[in-house]
Image 1: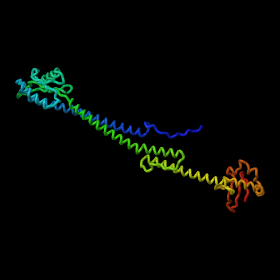
Image 2: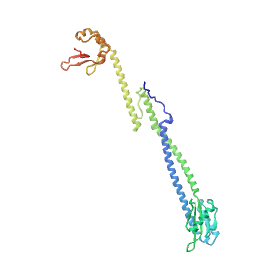
Image 3: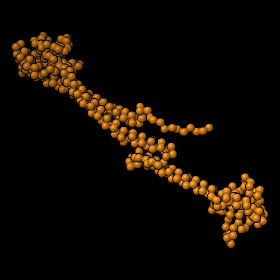
Image 4: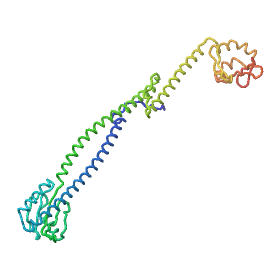
Length: 345
């Protein structure tokens, strides 16, 4: 059964090496950018929460130091002024504050925007019971005891409520801008990578395929491009160029051999070809005819030869066994006609 020969065909764009390499580059860039951006976002989020917590501790401690006399004497006007000024300076991160006396009675309260009053009251009770700072589970509410006098007697509690929402929203907005800019840079980088891959890999491979198709059709006259490149494609091109040159030389040699063979066979001069061992490998028709003409005279000096042997289709002259070999002493020559039969001439 004849073996089928593979045919060159156009590669589907979605299966091309160019598309595959471009997608690999895009995936690698996206994965790296996503990993870096995610890690950076988590670090910044953690920093924002830590910053708000530190700010809450600083402001609440400041309030507790300033409110001792006002709480001891229940000076609501001073409480309003002090708490209002401090919370205003704290900015939008501070949601509100509540001031209690030693019996957990509310002396002053700003509007609460976050936790309900029950949670704030519970923190105040914990501070009065422990006499130490108390932080809510979420970390957004902090209670600090208010002391007064030389003995630092606890006379009340101040609880402040905080949020990192506004800072996180600002951070998220900045991240979106950064991602938009990064996406633009990524798109430009992918276009540049795609053009580079197309010019330096896809198109050279396409030209090599075209050259290979040309060689496969038996056309060895062209030249293979990309042989100047110092990379793997250049090595492939050089190898293909060597193949093309070798095939071209073989084609020229075959043409020359065919021409010489045709001239030898069609020549009117009798010709005989022997190898280095003086074995007759070919005689042209003119030589065959000459031997046929002189067969009668040849038989007289060479009885072993006969017209029957010469005209036999399996005659050794066609099989390369009729030989002519030089003698080592007198250089006389002997024509061998198979089976050891010979005659000196």
